[in-house]
Length: 125
Ligand code: AMP
Image (cartoon, rainbow, N blue to C red):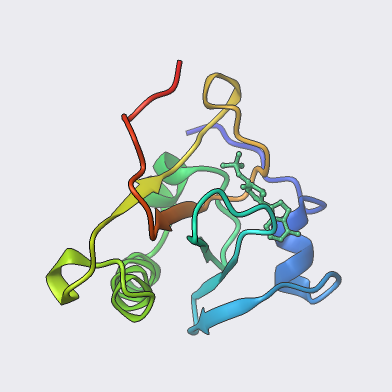
């Protein structure tokens, strides 16, 4: 794994408190906040507090504690946002972009949680 982490990326600034966000959940290792340009009625971003660039970086290099905390927090906010089919919701889509082909805008690992309306086919183009 050969990722370089950019300490000046926008989510690093949010984690440092340099710029504001609209948080919906926070744990020791994970932060969840609303996307500033929502693409659906529910559009949350789940990020680890650690310095990981993309999901494969996180999956390969984060501690077991960070990985469990991230995923448990993910499940909790899906239920709380009302999109988890397992909790009576109509569903959601998770997107995790990595690198230029996926047009990753912010190089700090994050999962998008999108829901609250029918989301259409998996890929637009
Ligand atoms: P990605 O292309 O997967 O890297 O997506 C980055 C996401 O971060 C986009 O959906 C942006 O709208 C969102 N975003 C960028 N800046 C902020 C910010 N300051 N607060 C919340 N969301 C942001």
